[in-house]
Length: 322
Image: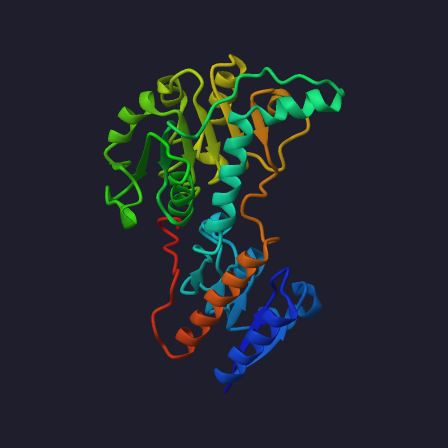
C-alpha cells in the first residue's frame, strides 16, 4: 500500500516539483502538490507525510506520521496539543537558511556601521553631506550568540573582514569547524563576561524556553558604548522593552529582523528610533532560490530515509524546542 504524501510549500519551481515527483515515485508514495491545504483538505488530513509548515494540519490529523516543515523554526509546534498524533515525527529545514541569513547579517552590520540609513535620509533631501563618522568590521570584537548553521555561516563571512576577534557562545563550549577564536558556554553563563568586550553582538538562537529573554537589561548594560546588536533568531531571546529603553538613550545601535510581537504594531516606539535598523523578518524567508533548493534537497533525502526506515536528518526534539 502506497504512502500518501502531501506537499504544500511556496516558491517551488518546476524543477523542484519534478524532483519531488521522482522521489515520491521511487518510494512508491501517492503524491499531491498543492498551493494551499484547502485545495484538497481531505487528502492532506489523511496523509501519512506532509511537507509544509502546517500547524493546523498537525493539530487535527491523527493519520499524520511525519511533518517536514520547510522552515527552521518550530515555535508553533511546541504547544502541548500541537499534534493530534503525539508520536508524529517533526523535522525542520535547519541548514537551508544559513547562507541567506549570514548575508543579511553582513548587509545590516555594514549599513549600521557606515551610517547608511542616515545617508539615505540626507540623499532623499537632495543634500550633499559626507561628514558622518563611520566604523568598520575590521578590528571589531564580534560575539555570536549561537554557533549553529547561521552562526557558522556568519562567522565565515565576517572573518574575511578581519575582525579583532570572533567569539562563539553555545551550550557545549565546543568550537565547530574551528571557526571561532574563542567559544564560551551559555549554560554556565560564562559568556556574560564577554559582553563588556563586545563591539558587535549577533543573536541567532531559536525561541526555546531556555532562551526566553536570555539577553536582558543587565546584559545590555554590560555592552560598551557604541555596541551594535543584530538579532536574526527569535524576538523572544531579547527583552525587547529593555532593549528599546537602552536604544532610546542613544548608547547602542541595533538591527532587528525579529520581534516579540509580529507584525510589529504600527504604534510601537521601535519604528521611530533612529539607531534601530528594522527589517520585517526577511533575513531567512523563502524568496532566495538557493534556500528553496536546499529545503527540497533536505526533504528528498529524508523521504528516502523515511521510506527505508532509516533515521531522519534534522529530526527535532519538541521538548527542547529545536
